[in-house]
Length: 312
Image (cartoon, rainbow, N blue to C red; front, side):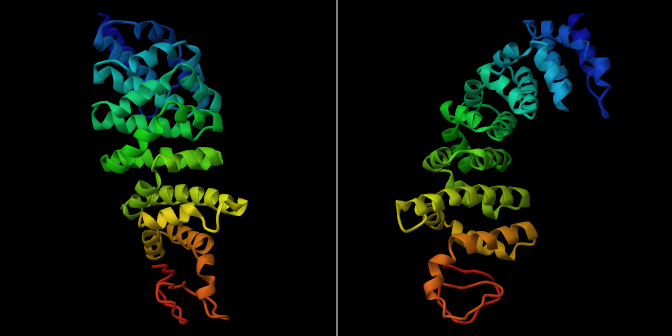
């Protein structure tokens, strides 16, 4: 009877378009009790109901948080059954799409060690992908939240997945790393580099998904900005991160993106080459040479090829 009732309640909470939230919001106190059940079917349907209710605007997310379900949801991230774990994880993932305070609720309830466990243990692809997506929304938060992810020792395993996992997981891991470079401090970004993020970001520049290529370019550009700041502080004569990208075969890949069909990718590649590699070759350019479609510095020809920058 309880299984049937929970399944029915879950169905009331779902649908496209979604049901009026005020009509289904009264289900929250019941769901708060149901997620303490020991019955796997009841837990599964109750968690799916919460995932439907938390999928939306910040006021919906806040109502789910206010219902008091969160400590138990975090416990369920360690549940042995994937049928319970997946909707619990989806609900947590929905909550971190909210504002920084709502994301902080996830951190304060010790969800990060659970997410680390999902990344590092033998879970199915869909769970690792969802965990990376959840982390990417946390690294899109403020610097303190990025630091919480660092302190939880999540970055190393995330970079490992970025390097070795299936493409669907790599995509979400790329978002997580790139978001951290976007909002992170210089020290946080230097930590990401120390964990080995440059090479896998460079490797993804040849992937077929233009959105992921853009995400990786943005991450690398944010890293290059830190390298430039370090250089200007007198840390050396070169941008060490530009050199690391070159060593990771990233420079060749960025050059090749000048012929990409996507205008945003093409323009970003040209801008990065101009900003971080062109000045190194200025002495090699004959005076009065005005670039039109780019440069080729590999053979230092005075004439400009039409193919774009080439720093080979």
